[in-house]
Image (cartoon, rainbow, N blue to C red; front, side, top):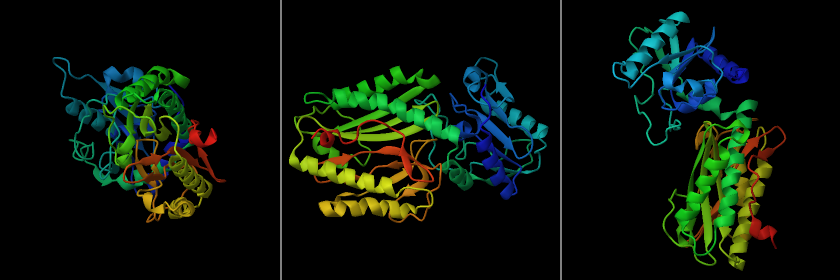
Length: 395
């Protein structure tokens, strides 16, 4: 078992105290990862973090080996799904009542994930338990607590990562590099989009597991080619389309390594790029580099977005950039903080991780390069190392 991320706990406890709360109870996989370092397998685990005393974790007994990857020593397990076992919800409620009594939380004000938004998946991505909308029932029998929505504060806290979290997200990006290398090598005329996507996902699963101690690595690769790239900003999926000579090919890649996420995109040409395509690559590169230069502690998110859009003006392509410049990433694929958009009122802070993804989309084409970038006092650092504009750099 690892030592705790005391930096993370201290930040959460300070926010709880500011809101006159005695503890935080979290069940969503991303928040369990943030508070315990353990990525739930089935999504039926709960963390209790009190402002005074040690945290506790409840989890299925079948997940003990996964729990040992985290840093909470007080683990209370329950058996489920065998003949004679209690319903998991009854077991969770029973254990939570015990924890709250042990930590003297009965009758106190307790924070929970009431208005939390999108939800990251547990390890078993083919089936995720829905539970209540908040994923923790505020009416736990016997708890006698006053349950308070702590969702907005959780989003803000998750927006600024600790040093340990940045290291883990960096690892997820490096695992993504394995898949991007396959995308570059496998994309060629005559290949099907789905073929390339499958090869990328296989590489990440094969090489990612074991990389820097990673236990679980997986991905979703969506390869989009030719005229289909015009909609590549709107989450299309890979198809059986055969790539043609001269096609633009975009890959959107989601990667998760032990519960920490990366969100990456690359675009290549299948064959020799045309002058028009080189013009598009040059413009997208200018927008990316202008935004990267503008990112630093204290910068306004809207100013970073504006830098990217202004860089497109000399190319006459500003109108083709139709979406945001960046969003938060790390505990899940898309996080709300920071959000780099023309109407954003947010301020960037050290430790925030944002995507950086200016793109260009016409009637019959699309092109985007996306990295995950950590904000520092002096500027910004991309966490992915794969080539970005190989066609331009080859000239």
